[in-house]
Image 1 (cartoon, rainbow, N blue to C red):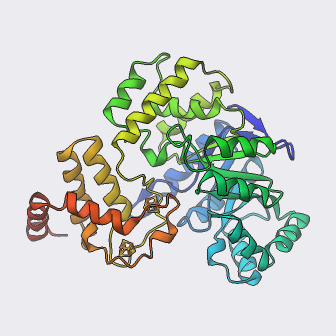
Image 2: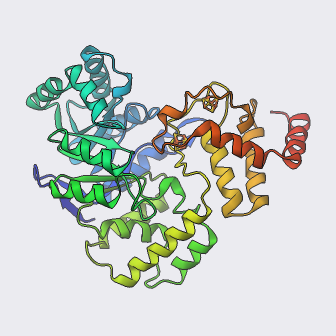
Image 3: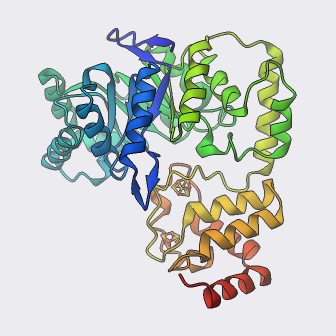
Length: 393
Ligand code: SF4
Ligand code: SF4
């Protein structure tokens, strides 16, 4: 494993971080035994940065339990996030934080983030609640070591936010497709100029740059030298940039952990030549040409009161264009009808509740109407009718 230095406090952070949002699941809940096996393997392989959040169901609790049980708390950095959008006053912040310490079975958080901070105005609102004084107290007492924020908006507002406080670190969505969207390279450079660690989330855009890659992009990587999987290419693109400190991967299989660790043992900043950089431009073009809705599957928009499986609908809709009509419709039928309650796009009541939670700023009701028009034709309706009539759900 390679490590990069937090120049502010001397922490040595593994360039591969563990994203704890997608722990393996069994029967609807986190598979604790399998998660433990995987976390131990990652720690053994040198991963020392674990990123969770208050709102990831069961994640803080399971992470805390595994680290405590195996006596590993002091070998890793825990990053977790304050759901500031749920906080009405300072007492609520304190209560939430106490719950996080208890779930994580720890007396301190190494990296504490304001979760999905959208802009400097919201930061001002938090300051109005006394968050600055509260954070200062926590840092003095040692309960919080570093304060940062995670961000999903554009580069302009990111830079404003970056300059609105003396942050210890930040976390952005960044990958070769988002080089010029979101905080983008411009945001990365601005954070790098402040010498603060930059943690990268969505390095594979919710899997779209892995298994969800269109054929054309797969071919581009398959023809490239040296031989690497599309995932390894995507990670190496990030680690090539010295301003990137930790790349979070939502790992949930042993193969994925081993493959990523092997790559993180080799990667160096500044190793890519011009021809390799050109490769990513071509691949990005192939990906964006096929993606209809830039949904990463994060699930922040869920649950929908009308029962729509929002990320599922967008995933199938995108597949219809990247993998073909039949593949998209088949997946859409399986995803939205083989369950007790239907969850297809046309159930949307346009209440707008989901939209304000979407970090990708997707106009969800409008795009769902598009999904419904495209995907719910006669073939879908007949298949859905048949399944609901003859399959016991
Ligand atoms: S706008 Fe539609 S998809 Fe979004 S929460 Fe409301 S009903 Fe659900
Ligand atoms: S629609 Fe937005 S919030 Fe919902 S899963 Fe997709 S990216 Fe996440």
